[in-house]
Length: 225
Image (cartoon, rainbow, N blue to C red; front, side, top):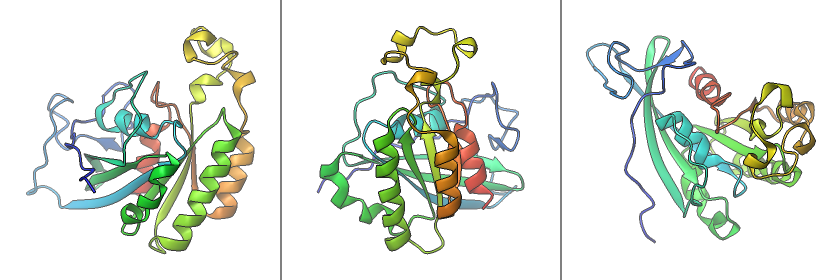
């Protein structure tokens, strides 16, 4: 099998709307320059897995976190992609080592080799597609059954930009690639997903990889666990 590893990107999150708890190691430098001074703080590595059904926006979430970027027509992940990001979270520096796994069914058999040693996992679903939450639940069960018993699992409902009320968005619904892609497009109520996460012992977030809402919050919360 070919090596799924890709070149890692270690640029810092943008300063615009930046979470004060999550910032570049040397905040006096331009945000595109990232460095770590081991004489200041020790480095904590955190092996994190992203999983979920195909086309729910897993790769877009990690791209937003690592590069503060969004690609409208991103190609599907083949096998898995590897990215890293170093952040200072309160009194420690965390290096997130992120495996972004493909959601297509034909790659499902490869999943165990990525999550056996994972310390954390983000299971992603699409808030406009109810079936994707059902699939996310099956991933959660598999992680709880086969992964490290101490793994921290977060459930992330992505694409909330497609369901925000019209008065909060100036975009044409057609630009979102769905008809009536705001409130009428939501198929997974927030309270339903939150109740499931609480019952299953998961962290819960709703996110938009497109505009960045909630993305850094996932990693801040995981980093503090």
